[in-house]
Amino acid sequence: MAGRLDGKVAVITGAASGIGLGTVELFAAEGARVVACDIQDEKGRMLEQRFKGQVRYAHCDVTQEADIAAALGLAKSEFGGLDVLFNNAGISDRMTSIAEVTTEGWDWIFSILVRAVALGMKHAAPLMIERGGGSIINTASIAGLQAGYGPIAYSTAKAGVIHMSRVAAAQLSPQKIRVNAICPGLIATSIFGASFGLPREVADQMAAMVAANGAKAQPIPKAGVPDDIAKAALYLASDDSLFVSGTHLVVDGGITVGGRHSW
Ligand code: NAD
Image 1: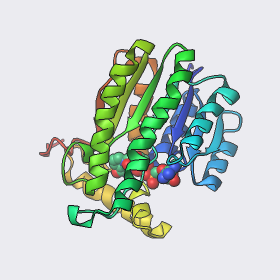
Image 2: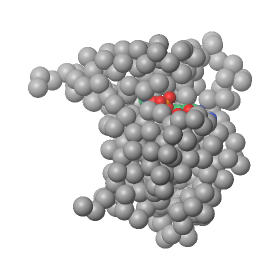
Image 3: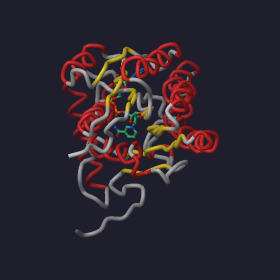
Image 4: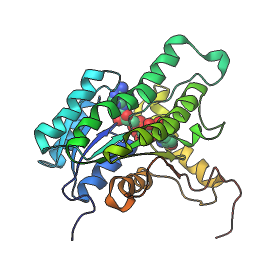
């Protein structure tokens, strides 16, 4: 059976874990060739081994423009071009309130969550233009839509990603490049533990707890998993969404709608 991404080449950042990892797996299953970018080299190399010939790992610290450019270049040198960029790498922080904001902390969060997305789009666009168009997907968050789902710098950065995606969609539409954001709700990944520097087992427990608590509060009472977001990314990456650009797709079990319905 034909895959929904047959013939397409995708670059995915934050690919070693959580949402990025789930998206590499789904995109590969749907026929894409993927450059998987992360700073967790051991996990990245294991991914390359698992999908030999179909996935290439690139050490890419998204705070470094040269790393981003090199990873995108690998899509062309290794797989012949670039059709899809999933700007997904992320981290959260502990600056919960305005009083806790520091210059370094603010710049660090923005360098990963906002600047990297802009630079990714900057270096991806010329490669996509060579292919006659493409799809850029940026991971935002429900924290960028409503207060109460993340620390202040994180939430502000994610709101920025939503709007940057709209601006870029308008700018890149003449080149047939679509740009959209995804706003995940509470998804069981290591981001919660990683942000607090917790050991692996504790981080995993925390992820499960966050997802279970989310499920209790959501109209759809199911813990969010990376595959829920990967499926949204698949839609936006595929030709099924050729009429969709400049939007943000909320995938959150309905938590931002509020209320709870009987099923
Ligand atoms: P995760 O911790 O499982 O994955 C994040 C990945 O990004 C990790 O593999 C990490 O190594 C990588 N990364 C971190 N800093 C990097 C850097 N400087 N350069 C390259 N890679 C880097 O977390 P996740 O939940 O899968 O996060 C993916 C995205 O989803 C993030 O942008 C996050 O903000 C967003 N998000 C997550 C949730 C959630 O509930 N998990 C909700 C909303 C949005």
